[in-house]
Image 1 (spheres, rainbow, N blue to C red):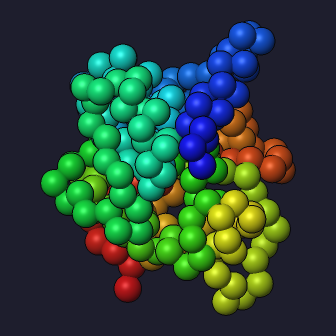
Image 2 (image 1 turned 180 degrees about the vertical axis):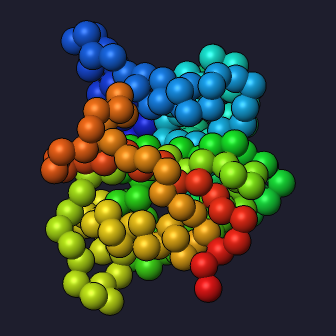
Length: 204
């Protein structure tokens, strides 16, 4: 695992050198929040690519990741920013009052089996009432009834109906959904960006 953070960053540096624009996620946060000041929880921040850009734009950011190598790379880029080594299923940040929580980079697909409900509940507690959860991930076929959301790190795909159901149970309502971070319409592709809002009460 020693070079994972370096390797991850190298991939995006290569894409940038090829002329790819890398800040679609930050642009979407701008559109949803209307610009800073606001507080953003980067849930599964990796090496901090998005959190560092959001901080540069004036947002208060708090990056959380379970991988110490990735988080070390994030801290090296922005030591003054707020970073936390933690598992999202064991995150206790009721004091954060975030306006938006971001789960980019297929974070949902990399969760351990069965922990999505706990992760969503923890993210909800980290958000202010009415705060937004924005998640982007690759899509899979409809899961059989009773199937677990999660099948090993990165080895599974998630159906949107199953994800929406888990969000509803955790106390979120669907606000919008697109096929890309740039807001293109979802037309049966294999990727979706979903926006859910924290409701006042959780489902029974």
